[in-house]
Image (cartoon, rainbow, N blue to C red; front, side):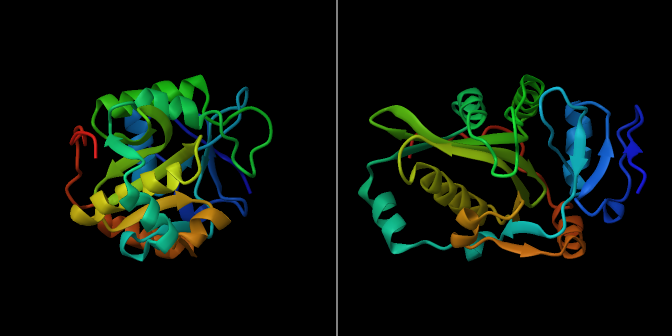
Length: 230
């Protein structure tokens, strides 16, 4: 199928017309407003260094409904032990830099979190739209995750850990916050066995876009999520 080249305006083609691999469009830029528009339509940027910007909406789509998060007894024991401390939005730059060292299973070559991508998400963080969860062990950052909050959706981008269970603890606390604030869905984009074991499920793109169109109309939780160290 023909590949849609993005114009200067922040508009995208219908993601239902994406190619078999989920590719929706090529080009454009990483202007924060374009990124927000993309996520609001179920589209996200993902590309290797040296490539043009590629925009995707895969089918199926893996999502985690917050109330379906599997709180395994072993993980609950770790959380309850207090060996890890957790914060929100305190070390966003450090979290995204650490995530950049983690390769996605289906990405070959350089990290997909390019310097250009980092800059864009740091801008979104300063706008109160991108958020991070930090996990500490003995006052050292050992895990975390980051993503975007738009309407009733949290769009998870990446996570990392340098100590066993640290990223799971980050997700545990994120889910707690999202449930408390009546979020509907966590978009985790593509299926992984790790997230599936924690309750995520794959749904058809058509269903995802329908759920998104409803949830995105909710008031966004904009601003810092910092509530101190937990």
